[in-house]
Length: 352
Image 1 (cartoon, rainbow, N blue to C red):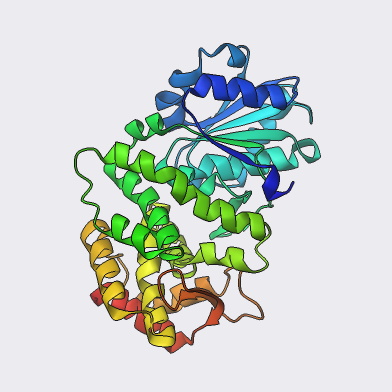
Image 2 (image 1 turned 120 degrees about the vertical axis):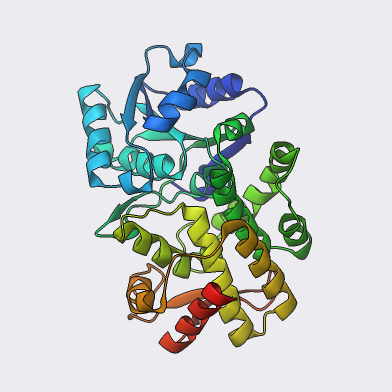
């Protein structure tokens, strides 16, 4: 399915938008995938919609550590036992873990059934639910198994943001900040001066559309990450390694926190290798340090982090591949760094 076929709707009336989407996608049965948290907090918002009468709900454990083969098997089993066919419809109601895993389950069951994403976290609204990446973690590595396949519709309803704690708001905000850094100075200034005070939900709602457009524009040009889509991985080469290490240590970290830490390290590499402006490096690092803290890593972890980076899907021939920035919006894909340079960036991340 091409990226052009995905429709992103910022809902004014969620029930009406969902009825319209479901009418376009002819189906014989409806399934809704939730995790334990979204079953409790988000399913009650939509469960009485007439269009969902008779829908079968499949629920899996919450958290990125549940984005695994066991949860995937539970979804496949739920679809099979519920009598799903390739003409059935799966609605993924949840954060990035649900839209990633649910999208992969739908893409592979009966060789592919239709699905709709209703993201319920800021992270999934700005990033995970858009762009057709689906998959699970495997063998201790993030998103190791998966396919590119778009949901037909992504319906964004900012009322779900009310269900989030501050840490999950920050997790999504890191992806918004990444989108600003790869696009334009004005948006970066706007995001870097946010104080997370009164009226935050309204400000996030206003910024959501333009933020999602950054990703949508890039994905439409390069749906399968052959070239410019790699820009969206800014902050993720180091970030995914930090996230995977935290998972290995049984101390799971929210994805956006790992991305925030990755942004700091990769901006440092951008500064040393491409002369990214020092003032903007310092201001971004200060904002991230003040809001996200610093990761619980020591120099004893560096070799393991480097080993994890070598598994990144953007790499070729074992060389660690980065997206770096010459300036805000000045994207440079397919950049490399030596082990020593990467360790220096990790020093900067830890010590500033």
